[in-house]
Length: 134
Length: 288
Image (tube, rainbow over all chains, first blue to last red; front, side):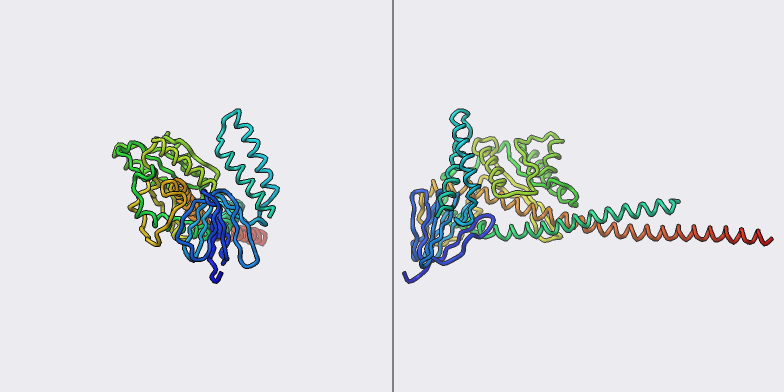
């Protein structure tokens, strides 16, 4: 592992990370994928999920949702509508969001409200809980 | 001739107004700094999107996604109009509304109806008074907004476009050029013209999922991004416009106070002179 790959994670409100990493692992819509230095140019839509990168002995986890990964040989750029480190996540808020989403889904069976949105909210909340627990 | 007391009262009133305009000026200045910071933070995100689309542009055929498809006949267009929620910001709202009125007139001349999607109270009120067709509006958003607000607006117009309620979608927002200059700008949101996207070239990417589905993910986000960009520019412009307007107002107050003080001094001096004359007149009479 001679060379490190550059990683940038940007959201509409800030640049979350800009660092070097040995390996970056992302939740693609067609499955998780890892990126090393010298990867061929690659564009992927990302699922709601957790991503992580390793730099030396350090491993950092992030929750991402609604984004893309643009990979060139030297650099991975993640653009996402939301991305946050596990340590930044407000667990209590995520738990409340989870409860809310569950309640919505339960109601959706009878009222037929926007199922897809409630489900997406549920998945986001679950991912954030999971990443926060890392 | 106003009495001395009237003038004093007037000066006190103007001073209070000045305090308010000064405070509003400082609040706007602080908010402007925040808004500019947000624009700065947003730039890398927007650039990545633009370069992605630019990279793809050369390989995109209009058939691949409905967002690229131009309707053969245009009967109705959607216009997202951004204005502020509040006034006291100079000609900011008026400029935006005028731009929208001009746009609607031009479309009307071509036999096209304009549906308004108003973001901000001022624009909403104006077009509601005129009974313009308005499928949706958002008010009280400017004080605190984030990406989800832009997503809500984008979702509304994208669904109108996809269901054929409108054949084209435009956006009018103010562009922040500098603190002194903000200009309304008209942007075409839909259909996206692939020819207009700058072809940036770059490496040939492989896609996951394949291009057509990839665009399914990318294009709605691209519209979200464009709308959010409008939000940020508009917010910064509003604060800049208010700052300038309030600065002018404070200066006018100062000028008014100066003039009134002159008038007051004159009235006071007149009063003193009159009293002196009385006293002297009285003393003369007693001597007599």
